[in-house]
Length: 219
Image (cartoon, rainbow, N blue to C red; front, side, top):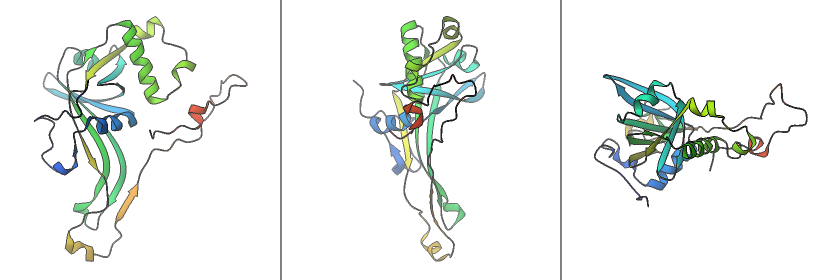
């Protein structure tokens, strides 16, 4: 059974500690809304940060990519990784440039990822990755064949050491700057799905499914 929080000396926020969130449920809500994570690792003294898709199942984060990927090959050797997911919610425009900010939600996970070698777990992880992006799509699509599965690596990262950071709210200016006559406020930002566009080679009579027509990222 997962613990409600899992902060550590490495993940505990020092600067702007009031924005820290160590609640597991709150962190998972951020992870479940995002699309892309950035995986940081070091190879021979050189830092790399690679964006990739992911999905969460319980207290595990699944990452996938090409079996030929340098990242996935080296990460599976047990080197330390830092996985970050960030959602941008708004631009905070203050009266002073110094106090400009952003409203955001982010999660940082530290740990070591390992390759999923069990065929059933690997296929299930790929299904969950698909469902994370677009629920309902997996059952309507052709399933991966043996060649595709062999060319794809899936890594499992236990979500054990993590923290979240959240900034929400209005402008915070220095008191003397409130007399400065310039507009200040928040420009909200959100991801909005557009109207689905049919593929040119779509078979006659195939309609846009409901999960695509009414797509939203809000859970």
